[in-house]
Length: 379
Image 1 (cartoon, rainbow, N blue to C red):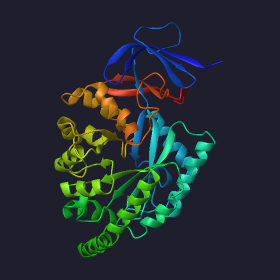
Image 2 (spheres, one colour; image 1 turned 135 degrees about the vertical axis):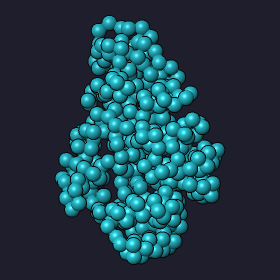
Image 3 (cartoon, rainbow, N blue to C red; image 1 turned 90 degrees about the vertical axis):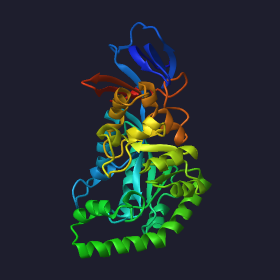
């Protein structure tokens, strides 16, 4: 006997419109969509029904495992805490960003990163998790141990995305050394002399390691069907390099020029949802809202605040010209699904997975009331 659930009296957010009606779920998939109310089932009382959100780049897991300097939490408990916050933010599919290559910002070892990955995989096997978890490898190509860290994941089929990034001073996000000093000199509590020596060391590491590491990782990913992302592209030359390396996603371009060139080259442009909500980048880079207004924005990521993903979509539909709610929702559902090859989710459509979220908007803030993954309630 098949398992059925009716979601009734909802505002259903489809790809291009919002309709009142009901959705029938059968055996974990969407079996019917009707623009009339059905009898019985769960009464939405006019709340929105949207697809489950798909998150491609969240740096949130490490904070649960390492909540204070030199403090390490149980890895499975850390994963469960992270997963709970992800799911209650309406995210049903998440690519957990795992660091590969230990730069100046790292306080963990490659072995600890692999331990966290093992905790995720064990929790998937034991059915502990609310959301569907995969991996995004954040590859710091300037780091000397980047390829050593990458080797821990070479046979892991849960890896769906790998980004190539270089946070050395004078590169990409930190072309402006004053911005780099604001972020790192204060954080690491270095004197001016110490900071200058630190910068020279990091720039030398970048000059030595970035080129070979970019090539090795991009070659591997192309051969193994892993989607590649660039990170913090700032110029047209950066985009040309990305295209040559087989990049498909442009993460957090720092300038309008780079975003426009990425879009023209056929890359999916990803920006941070906190950038949308705040009205600009915390690093002083280009505004995600500005990219949306120019038609250069394809995907949003929660980055460091899980709830910002759903918050940004309703915020954009109210504040950004020519962005409707269905269009805003696509930035966190359909578009990221397509970018990493998830063909079975990301839209409310007959035959797709019943990954769904019930949302009520209160004082312009979306309130996640219920979440289903494959038709099973997880929140």
